[in-house]
Image (cartoon, rainbow, N blue to C red; front, side, top):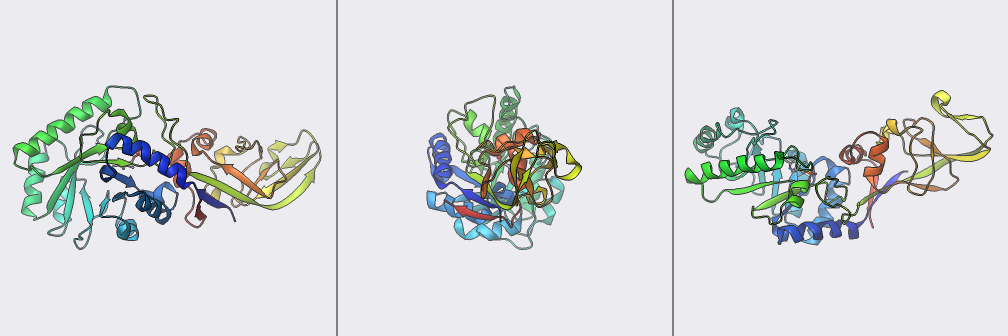
Length: 333
Ligand SMILES: *Cc1c(COP(=O)(O)O)cnc(C)c1O
């Protein structure tokens, strides 16, 4: 079966770079949503804990339950609980949903500083705070998210200014102990000094951050995908391989078929247009459960940097990684 290896040294290297920015491991919240960007939520939680990380961010309650024991603090980005919980904090994404949270729930208020996706606007903020108080929710933090932190534009700056305005509204209304956080990976790298309480880092800890604003060479990709040989054959010049016969061999060759296909997360747009890190060429269309390469190796390293595969799939590393199915075995090395 195809399998994934996770390079712990690279993971720790990436956390070192972030810790250098935050000056404290306690300010780092690792983003483990969507099976830890396809890396395996339990595997990454284990490594993060070993490194000394105490905080994590997930998408939903089932993910939070899976990793609760590894951390002191878990933030759920989008789910409303039935009962309040000690370690788990929940995000308020919409002023009209405040009523749905059970009394005493620890909540964090998402502020819409310009992305216009989730959160309450600055205008709604006083009413939202009133509703939180009336509902007896425990407001622990206010946070926001940038829409273009990885791009060299003014957007990051004016969103920061809007978040500063939100902080001032909270302080003026007497919310002195509310924590603040606004930075994802790209935003964390843009700050020379993180004076907020926490950063929420995803793609950088997995080593696949890309940006036109700052150097990302020091980050090292954590995940490699390996596939195993199903079969091998000799084909002669002029024969064609796979569905539709779109790939014609231009010389007599030995080719093999490997157990990684589009159902496993191999983007079909890579068909006939991808070469592995070791130079083996993908031949023809990717099938559901397998794909053919110009190789006789028993095992193929399909990719060790999702950013490169992403180019051939006309997408970005986030999608390549989160497409990898849960059932693929993950090994920490
Ligand atoms: C996914 C997500 C992050 C992490 O973003 P990266 O670009 O992977 O660092 C941070 N904050 C929120 C709200 C998110 O949804």
